[in-house]
Length: 346
Image (cartoon, rainbow, N blue to C red; front, side):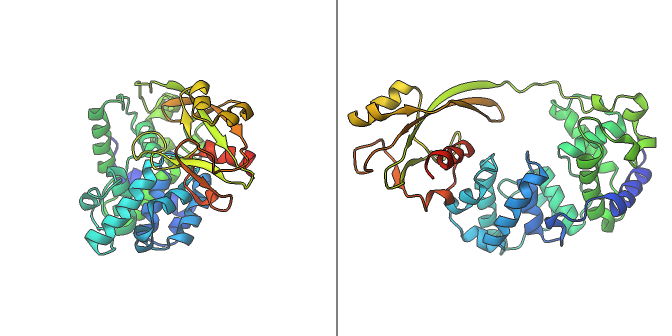
């Protein structure tokens, strides 16, 4: 087992001189900003998150402002960032912080985990970065750093092995609580900028002389995770109806399932089903736009947009609401729907 002192001390020293210091959520130890950034950064690159983070703070500068917003407002600002359950949990969490904790984030790792959408790693990030609690995070970047440093070859697709790695992570923490914010930021920075998934920059790593994976000459062999995601595919047909007044027909999705709670074009399982849902005259005006693939975490969606431009939105159409051109850009829309509207309804 590697010793605590060299790892923690080297990491803290490296972060102070080589780590990232210009990210907008690093300006202070405000738990609201840290929490917001941690949720946005799940499965999403920093470069993508930056603009969304700034826009969220402009609209919801405090947890009270976010809690008071409607879900539609939150989803509208989140639109395009993906993994929309994060946005719904974000909203629920803000309401819980206001209603149950007086608008103040709990200061402990254990209590933070009781909030909607906050798992152990996010709770550890908030507790360590904001409140100096000695608790280890274990996101994807950190798993990579630690498995390489330790030569940890157990399969992380098994929960018991991940818990074992978390115990190692806890043992490597700095002794002084005051070092925890720098340490936690440092291990995230190291994984994001040096100990990368492909072609890690071992020559720039402060742990190079202690790293088991480098000594083996196989850093990219870690972490080990053998369970593969089983991908599926599905074909869907979108009705893109745009009236001459510029209104578009949208339906709000159910609160469960794909694109839950978002506004979407009417969806059908086949072109035939789509045509049968239209007024007779509209069936003859329907034009198929180019199909395209949209990739989700576990599924490939093959999307087939069908465009029709009725003279009026007053005709009998599938259930939904006609939304004018000034209103739909602010709604929570799935990324492929927003792209289609930008191409055909502007």
